[in-house]
Amino acid sequence: MKLHVERVLRAAPERVWDVLSDWERQADWMPDVVWMRVEGTERAGGARILARTRVLGVPATTDVLEVLAWEPPRRLRVAHRGLVTGWGEWRLEPGEGATTRFEWDEHLRLPYGALGEAALRVYGPVQRAMLRRSLGSLATIVESA
Image 1 (cartoon, rainbow, N blue to C red):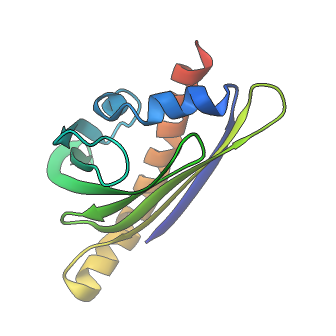
Image 2 (cartoon, one colour):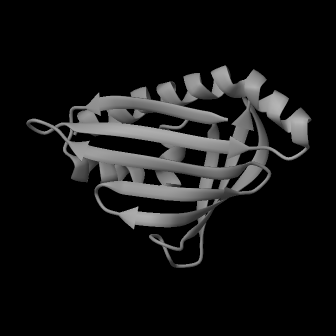
């Protein structure tokens, strides 16, 4: 499943990056995240993060994330290494004034062959709506400072 959402945020890229890179607080703006915990001391490139996520509102799985690209305040890419595999990427481009164009891509796979692919197709619209809702919550946080 491939997902893409984007939004212009009324905040500088550095402000947006500060919120994005605060791993433990991501549950504040991502409705499908119950909690996030960094394993070890590394918080940037190479970091390993556990994310307890909800499916249809029910805590269902603990996703394992590994930070593959860490380019503050422009780009963050993670690999999904739990039940859900694939990658996610956030890109930030400065706009006019103190604005940021934020793009979010997710390329996700489930095991179980055709059954996993079918499950992602069915769940895709829910996940896309969740990403949009997350961007709205992120905007509320970064634009209020």
